[in-house]
Image 1: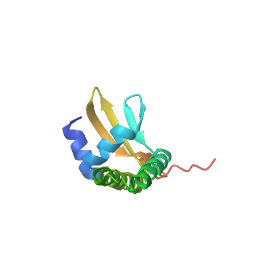
Image 2 (image 1 turned 60 degrees about the vertical axis):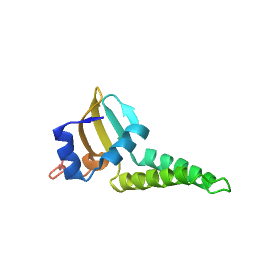
Image 3 (image 1 turned 30 degrees about the horizontal axis):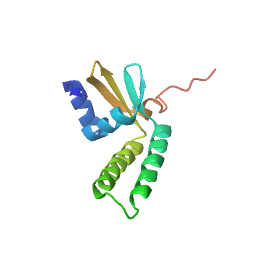
Image 4 (image 1 turned 60 degrees about the horizontal axis):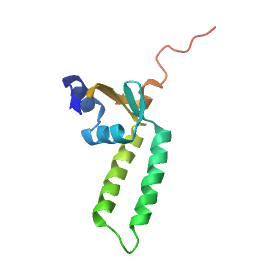
Length: 114
């Protein structure tokens, strides 16, 4: 994944790490030039990760796999705290990234009286 100067600046401003972007690019939903991870997708992914973590806690536990699952879960929870992340990519180049719920807040002066 190639990062432009713009996306690096936006990541810094919005508290999005490269690891979080990697999780979104691997497990997010692709829609044209956007890859996003919303709350529904996060909930589904957390269920799957927790299921695999429970499976790994048996007698034949692979500690490396369990460590990777815990790390993945940590980043998924960080993405959930942000309300999801959207990543805009064109031909493998990251253009920009933002919090998925950032455009759902009420705008100043948006309520009109009819």
